[in-house]
Image 1: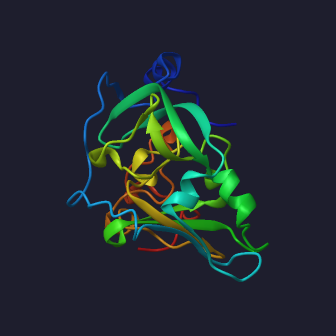
Image 2: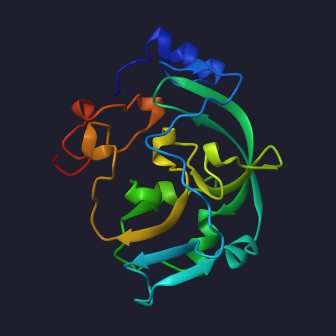
Length: 210
């Protein structure tokens, strides 16, 4: 049997907040490095690595914008301890991209690549979750550049650093590999309900050695 939940954990679950989080009314701007300039004629989204057909799949901005549009109502939990609840996100589901460019049978993880070489690794199950979305809109409005326009990943079941801003592609992987913040002391899995913030909290099966 597992350990009983603490009062803090029980209270957080009742409020809709993971443990250690506080409710945020606005949407703070948080990121590392400068805001990139969007150049639509040069923008491309790529799916590569261990694809089912062994090929790289690419969409320019016009083609990506024409993909099926979905809306997801989901929370965003930042590792800096603020949470936004019930935000409406619009964009392309990760499941849609996985159908258009399927992973090979041995794929277990995905690396999400963004501008300036930023990366975040996800388990395939987290990437394939029905609420994981490549967002172009929030509350019916286009994202601002500071919040990730033209494309950011939203992974509601994980801390927000697992959903990079300014996404440019995904790499299918047959073994796990740490991303940018995971190499710099953040937890390899990033489950906010387990409060998996930092690498020192990791168990033996939680990720590759640092």
